[in-house]
Length: 403
Ligand code: UD1
Image (cartoon, rainbow, N blue to C red; front, side):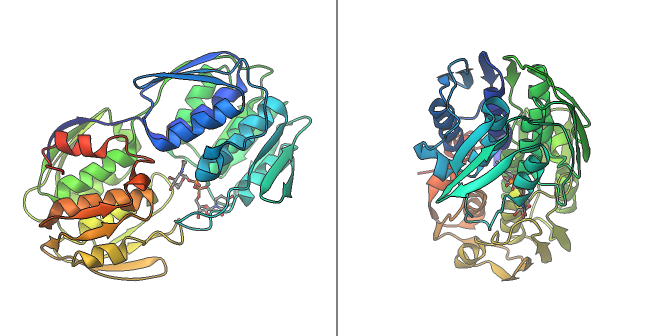
């Protein structure tokens, strides 16, 4: 992989920000919004709630003035995990919410107990009818909430519910991911009063009303990370633009440990790899600023070609080693058990037909295919399109020939 690339807008920032538009009445303008299927599904849900949505390239216009429906049941609702983010915003706007009960998904059970417990502290009550989750809060009141795990989604829902609640909400044990700060920035642009985002203690002072806002969605740190591991695996040299260095956490340091030369400024990163990458003794996924679970598969693919033995621990989701069997088909030597994988790097993988079973694993298999000898076919590209706007186009821009 060789060349320069502008990184698309962040999926995980865009989705809660779109949910947040419901909290204010007016016409919102969002720039740098990724054209991915998860965003399209969220837009369907906003339309379901009564919003008018239009798109011009990467600019989205959301008119929430006609919103009036707290029941979300559109086709997209069952497909997408982040439907759950609508809990906080629909409760804030309509004091009621009805969404399909978000079940497990391919990467693990993904319960929502922390969301429900936290929102209950603010005065919401929940019930379940068949496969539907119903919530009501005649009056949301600020409260002190302590999350026993820094859940990204629960922190987002609490922020969304707290901005229009009466009084002050303090969220302790909050997630510190850059997407939380992006959501807080957007809510502040709407008139919300939030302090402490980016730390584990966030304070929200409720306001009576929020207004429309214009905002630029930050670039996707996970898409950037995927291509950086691709660069390392292919002995390439890439410069990724629009990538806030502060969003990459410990990733640049890890790439250096793998033998890459890394240069970075405030909003770009340049990585160059000569020869084969080095194994890393131990990497464990962790909440930000630790190594992100969403890049664990791409790292595994890279380590499958590294010189030496690596250990990977997946601490966030139960079923996130699904690419092991696919990488093994390509000749990788990986032994995995529960949340632990031992990877003995091979100098070359062999191209073959593999199947993506979820979004991030699918992108990692594409990176593995780039480093493999011969032709590879990757099935299940619909998963990859949930989060990567144009992975084929991006790779072509970086000198890769795709059929
Ligand atoms: C978000 C991201 C996802 C990323 C994850 C962790 C979006 C749309 N998705 O997912 O890409 O992999 O953060 O960085 O932004 N948990 C509970 N109870 C809860 C909530 C979570 O036990 O009520 C557990 C989960 O099962 C998981 C861990 O907490 O083991 C982390 O989940 P969480 O941070 O909530 O992830 P998501 O917000 O679902």
